[in-house]
Length: 305
Image (tube, rainbow, N blue to C red; front, side, top):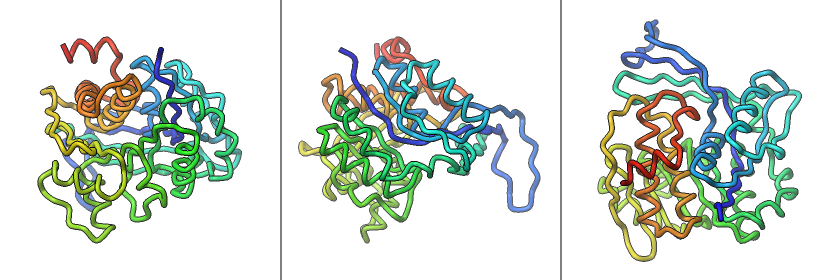
Protein backbone atom coordinates (compact mmCIF):
# COMPACT_ATOMS: atom_id res chain seq x y z
CA UNK A 1 0.00 0.00 0.00
CA UNK A 2 1.30 3.44 -0.92
CA UNK A 3 2.48 5.74 1.86
CA UNK A 4 -0.14 8.36 2.75
CA UNK A 5 1.48 11.73 3.35
CA UNK A 6 0.04 15.15 4.16
CA UNK A 7 2.09 18.28 3.53
CA UNK A 8 1.22 21.58 5.18
CA UNK A 9 3.48 24.14 3.58
CA UNK A 10 4.22 26.82 1.06
CA UNK A 11 3.83 27.19 -2.67
CA UNK A 12 6.17 29.54 -4.56
CA UNK A 13 7.04 30.52 -8.07
CA UNK A 14 10.83 30.40 -8.40
CA UNK A 15 12.73 32.99 -10.45
CA UNK A 16 16.06 31.34 -11.13
CA UNK A 17 19.26 33.03 -12.35
CA UNK A 18 22.40 31.12 -13.29
CA UNK A 19 25.42 33.23 -12.27
CA UNK A 20 29.20 32.69 -12.19
CA UNK A 21 29.24 33.92 -8.58
CA UNK A 22 27.14 36.04 -6.24
CA UNK A 23 27.21 39.79 -6.98
CA UNK A 24 28.99 42.12 -4.60
CA UNK A 25 27.02 45.02 -3.00
CA UNK A 26 26.24 47.60 -5.69
CA UNK A 27 27.41 45.33 -8.51
CA UNK A 28 25.37 44.40 -11.58
CA UNK A 29 26.31 40.89 -12.68
CA UNK A 30 25.45 39.23 -16.00
CA UNK A 31 23.79 35.86 -15.60
CA UNK A 32 24.12 33.07 -18.15
CA UNK A 33 20.51 31.84 -17.90
CA UNK A 34 17.11 32.65 -16.44
CA UNK A 35 13.93 30.64 -16.07
CA UNK A 36 10.90 30.29 -13.83
CA UNK A 37 9.87 27.05 -12.16
CA UNK A 38 7.33 25.75 -9.68
CA UNK A 39 8.81 25.75 -6.18
CA UNK A 40 8.33 26.34 -2.47
CA UNK A 41 9.70 23.88 0.07
CA UNK A 42 6.31 22.41 0.91
CA UNK A 43 5.27 22.03 -2.72
CA UNK A 44 8.69 20.63 -3.65
CA UNK A 45 8.45 17.96 -0.97
CA UNK A 46 4.90 17.11 -2.00
CA UNK A 47 5.92 16.60 -5.63
CA UNK A 48 8.99 14.61 -4.59
CA UNK A 49 6.94 12.27 -2.38
CA UNK A 50 4.31 11.82 -5.12
CA UNK A 51 6.95 10.89 -7.71
CA UNK A 52 8.27 8.31 -5.25
CA UNK A 53 4.86 6.65 -5.17
CA UNK A 54 3.17 8.21 -2.14
CA UNK A 55 -0.42 9.43 -1.98
CA UNK A 56 0.05 13.10 -1.15
CA UNK A 57 -2.44 15.71 0.07
CA UNK A 58 -1.42 19.37 0.26
CA UNK A 59 -2.66 22.10 2.60
CA UNK A 60 -1.58 25.63 1.71
CA UNK A 61 -2.55 28.91 0.09
CA UNK A 62 -1.94 30.78 -3.15
CA UNK A 63 -2.97 34.20 -4.37
CA UNK A 64 -5.91 34.80 -6.70
CA UNK A 65 -3.54 35.26 -9.63
CA UNK A 66 -2.36 33.41 -12.71
CA UNK A 67 0.87 32.45 -10.95
CA UNK A 68 -1.07 30.62 -8.25
CA UNK A 69 -3.18 28.83 -10.84
CA UNK A 70 -0.03 27.76 -12.68
CA UNK A 71 1.61 26.47 -9.48
CA UNK A 72 -1.49 24.42 -8.60
CA UNK A 73 -1.54 23.02 -12.11
CA UNK A 74 2.01 21.74 -11.64
CA UNK A 75 1.12 20.10 -8.32
CA UNK A 76 -1.98 18.47 -9.76
CA UNK A 77 -0.06 17.17 -12.77
CA UNK A 78 2.18 15.20 -10.41
CA UNK A 79 -0.81 13.62 -8.71
CA UNK A 80 -0.84 15.78 -5.57
CA UNK A 81 -4.32 16.32 -4.09
CA UNK A 82 -4.76 20.13 -4.12
CA UNK A 83 -8.40 20.21 -2.98
CA UNK A 84 -7.35 21.66 0.40
CA UNK A 85 -5.37 24.60 -1.01
CA UNK A 86 -6.98 27.97 -0.23
CA UNK A 87 -6.96 31.07 -2.44
CA UNK A 88 -6.34 34.45 -0.82
CA UNK A 89 -7.79 37.44 -2.72
CA UNK A 90 -5.50 39.98 -1.05
CA UNK A 91 -2.02 38.46 -1.23
CA UNK A 92 0.10 37.45 -4.20
CA UNK A 93 1.31 33.88 -4.60
CA UNK A 94 4.65 33.35 -2.85
CA UNK A 95 7.82 33.83 -4.86
CA UNK A 96 11.53 33.14 -4.54
CA UNK A 97 14.59 34.66 -6.20
CA UNK A 98 17.24 31.96 -6.58
CA UNK A 99 20.79 32.63 -7.74
CA UNK A 100 22.57 29.42 -8.69
CA UNK A 101 26.33 29.72 -9.03
CA UNK A 102 28.27 27.72 -11.61
CA UNK A 103 29.60 25.67 -8.69
CA UNK A 104 26.04 24.47 -7.98
CA UNK A 105 25.75 26.41 -4.72
CA UNK A 106 22.76 28.73 -4.36
CA UNK A 107 21.39 31.73 -2.50
CA UNK A 108 17.65 32.29 -2.07
CA UNK A 109 15.41 35.23 -1.13
CA UNK A 110 11.74 34.43 -0.44
CA UNK A 111 8.64 36.64 -0.43
CA UNK A 112 6.08 34.54 1.47
CA UNK A 113 2.96 36.31 0.14
CA UNK A 114 -0.18 34.17 0.40
CA UNK A 115 1.71 31.45 2.26
CA UNK A 116 1.30 33.55 5.41
CA UNK A 117 -2.50 33.50 5.03
CA UNK A 118 -2.68 29.99 6.51
CA UNK A 119 -3.09 30.44 10.26
CA UNK A 120 -3.55 28.02 13.16
CA UNK A 121 -7.30 28.60 12.94
CA UNK A 122 -7.37 26.95 9.51
CA UNK A 123 -5.91 23.61 10.59
CA UNK A 124 -8.68 22.03 12.68
CA UNK A 125 -10.69 21.26 9.53
CA UNK A 126 -7.87 18.98 8.36
CA UNK A 127 -7.78 16.80 11.49
CA UNK A 128 -9.56 13.92 9.73
CA UNK A 129 -7.02 14.04 6.90
CA UNK A 130 -4.17 13.68 9.38
CA UNK A 131 -5.90 10.82 11.18
CA UNK A 132 -5.74 8.89 7.91
CA UNK A 133 -2.14 9.71 7.01
CA UNK A 134 1.11 7.93 7.79
CA UNK A 135 3.14 11.13 7.99
CA UNK A 136 2.84 14.90 8.11
CA UNK A 137 5.61 16.95 6.51
CA UNK A 138 6.19 20.54 7.65
CA UNK A 139 8.60 23.38 6.88
CA UNK A 140 9.05 26.93 8.19
CA UNK A 141 8.10 29.06 5.18
CA UNK A 142 4.80 30.02 6.80
CA UNK A 143 3.67 31.56 10.09
CA UNK A 144 5.59 29.93 12.91
CA UNK A 145 2.48 29.59 15.09
CA UNK A 146 0.87 27.68 12.22
CA UNK A 147 3.79 25.25 12.18
CA UNK A 148 3.51 24.71 15.92
CA UNK A 149 -0.25 24.08 15.76
CA UNK A 150 0.27 21.68 12.86
CA UNK A 151 2.77 19.71 14.96
CA UNK A 152 0.27 19.55 17.84
CA UNK A 153 -2.64 18.43 15.67
CA UNK A 154 -0.47 15.96 13.79
CA UNK A 155 0.72 14.32 17.00
CA UNK A 156 -2.83 14.16 18.36
CA UNK A 157 -3.93 12.50 15.11
CA UNK A 158 -1.26 9.82 15.47
CA UNK A 159 0.80 11.01 12.47
CA UNK A 160 4.56 10.70 12.20
CA UNK A 161 5.53 14.40 12.16
CA UNK A 162 8.60 15.36 10.11
CA UNK A 163 9.83 18.96 10.40
CA UNK A 164 12.27 20.51 7.94
CA UNK A 165 13.26 23.65 9.93
CA UNK A 166 13.96 25.75 6.86
CA UNK A 167 14.56 28.53 6.47
CA UNK A 168 16.54 28.97 9.69
CA UNK A 169 14.63 31.27 12.04
CA UNK A 170 15.23 32.70 15.48
CA UNK A 171 11.67 31.88 16.53
CA UNK A 172 11.32 28.10 16.55
CA UNK A 173 7.86 26.49 16.61
CA UNK A 174 6.83 26.06 20.25
CA UNK A 175 6.22 22.34 19.71
CA UNK A 176 9.39 21.55 17.72
CA UNK A 177 10.77 19.24 20.42
CA UNK A 178 7.76 16.94 19.96
CA UNK A 179 8.39 16.02 16.33
CA UNK A 180 9.26 12.49 15.29
CA UNK A 181 11.98 13.55 12.87
CA UNK A 182 13.81 16.87 12.65
CA UNK A 183 15.59 17.25 9.29
CA UNK A 184 17.80 20.39 9.20
CA UNK A 185 20.81 21.17 7.06
CA UNK A 186 24.10 22.24 8.64
CA UNK A 187 23.18 25.94 8.83
CA UNK A 188 19.78 25.23 10.34
CA UNK A 189 21.21 22.77 12.87
CA UNK A 190 23.75 25.35 14.01
CA UNK A 191 21.05 28.03 14.23
CA UNK A 192 18.80 25.85 16.40
CA UNK A 193 21.60 24.87 18.77
CA UNK A 194 22.84 28.46 19.06
CA UNK A 195 19.29 29.66 19.82
CA UNK A 196 19.32 27.23 22.75
CA UNK A 197 22.62 28.63 24.02
CA UNK A 198 24.56 25.58 22.79
CA UNK A 199 27.67 25.48 20.62
CA UNK A 200 27.23 23.44 17.45
CA UNK A 201 29.85 20.68 17.24
CA UNK A 202 31.92 20.67 14.05
CA UNK A 203 31.52 16.89 13.99
CA UNK A 204 28.11 16.41 12.38
CA UNK A 205 27.42 13.06 14.04
CA UNK A 206 27.86 14.82 17.37
CA UNK A 207 25.68 17.72 16.18
CA UNK A 208 22.88 15.33 15.19
CA UNK A 209 23.12 13.55 18.53
CA UNK A 210 23.06 16.84 20.44
CA UNK A 211 19.99 18.02 18.54
CA UNK A 212 18.24 14.74 19.21
CA UNK A 213 18.83 15.12 22.95
CA UNK A 214 16.82 18.37 22.85
CA UNK A 215 13.58 16.47 22.28
CA UNK A 216 12.92 15.11 18.77
CA UNK A 217 12.68 11.32 18.53
CA UNK A 218 15.13 11.36 15.63
CA UNK A 219 17.32 13.79 13.69
CA UNK A 220 18.36 13.52 10.04
CA UNK A 221 20.97 16.22 9.39
CA UNK A 222 21.56 16.96 5.69
CA UNK A 223 25.13 17.71 4.61
CA UNK A 224 24.99 17.77 0.78
CA UNK A 225 28.04 16.01 -0.69
CA UNK A 226 28.91 14.53 2.70
CA UNK A 227 25.61 12.68 2.86
CA UNK A 228 23.54 12.85 6.02
CA UNK A 229 23.98 12.22 9.72
CA UNK A 230 21.17 10.56 11.63
CA UNK A 231 20.54 10.12 15.32
CA UNK A 232 17.90 8.31 17.34
CA UNK A 233 17.75 6.30 20.54
CA UNK A 234 20.28 3.83 19.13
CA UNK A 235 22.95 6.50 18.57
CA UNK A 236 24.30 8.62 15.72
CA UNK A 237 25.43 7.34 12.31
CA UNK A 238 26.97 8.90 9.19
CA UNK A 239 25.20 7.84 5.99
CA UNK A 240 27.43 8.35 2.90
CA UNK A 241 26.31 10.33 -0.11
CA UNK A 242 26.14 9.26 -3.75
CA UNK A 243 28.79 11.00 -5.88
CA UNK A 244 27.20 13.05 -8.67
CA UNK A 245 28.06 16.11 -10.71
CA UNK A 246 25.93 18.74 -8.98
CA UNK A 247 24.59 21.67 -11.00
CA UNK A 248 21.94 22.96 -8.59
CA UNK A 249 21.53 22.23 -4.89
CA UNK A 250 18.46 24.44 -4.39
CA UNK A 251 15.92 21.64 -3.91
CA UNK A 252 18.19 18.69 -3.09
CA UNK A 253 17.30 19.00 0.60
CA UNK A 254 13.59 18.86 -0.22
CA UNK A 255 14.13 15.71 -2.28
CA UNK A 256 16.08 14.19 0.62
CA UNK A 257 13.41 14.94 3.22
CA UNK A 258 10.64 13.60 1.00
CA UNK A 259 12.61 10.44 0.31
CA UNK A 260 13.30 9.99 4.01
CA UNK A 261 9.59 10.39 4.80
CA UNK A 262 8.41 7.95 2.14
CA UNK A 263 10.94 5.30 3.16
CA UNK A 264 10.06 5.61 6.85
CA UNK A 265 6.36 5.25 6.03
CA UNK A 266 7.20 2.10 4.07
CA UNK A 267 8.90 0.55 7.11
CA UNK A 268 12.57 1.38 6.52
CA UNK A 269 14.91 1.96 9.44
CA UNK A 270 16.21 5.49 10.00
CA UNK A 271 19.56 4.63 8.39
CA UNK A 272 17.89 2.91 5.42
CA UNK A 273 15.55 5.88 4.98
CA UNK A 274 18.50 8.29 5.10
CA UNK A 275 20.28 6.33 2.36
CA UNK A 276 17.12 6.49 0.24
CA UNK A 277 16.91 10.22 0.95
CA UNK A 278 20.57 10.68 0.00
CA UNK A 279 19.87 9.09 -3.37
CA UNK A 280 16.87 11.39 -3.93
CA UNK A 281 18.89 14.49 -3.03
CA UNK A 282 21.84 13.46 -5.20
CA UNK A 283 19.66 13.03 -8.27
CA UNK A 284 17.86 16.35 -7.67
CA UNK A 285 21.23 18.12 -7.51
CA UNK A 286 22.05 17.05 -11.07
CA UNK A 287 19.18 19.06 -12.59
CA UNK A 288 18.10 22.66 -12.74
CA UNK A 289 14.80 23.82 -11.23
CA UNK A 290 13.09 22.85 -7.99
CA UNK A 291 10.11 20.64 -8.76
CA UNK A 292 11.46 19.75 -12.22
CA UNK A 293 14.53 18.23 -10.52
CA UNK A 294 12.62 15.78 -8.32
CA UNK A 295 13.45 12.18 -9.28
CA UNK A 296 11.07 9.32 -9.94
CA UNK A 297 11.00 6.10 -7.92
CA UNK A 298 12.59 4.19 -10.82
CA UNK A 299 15.50 6.66 -11.00
CA UNK A 300 16.15 6.40 -7.28
CA UNK A 301 16.05 2.61 -7.27
CA UNK A 302 18.46 2.52 -10.22
CA UNK A 303 20.96 4.70 -8.33
CA UNK A 304 20.57 2.55 -5.20
CA UNK A 305 21.35 -0.51 -7.28
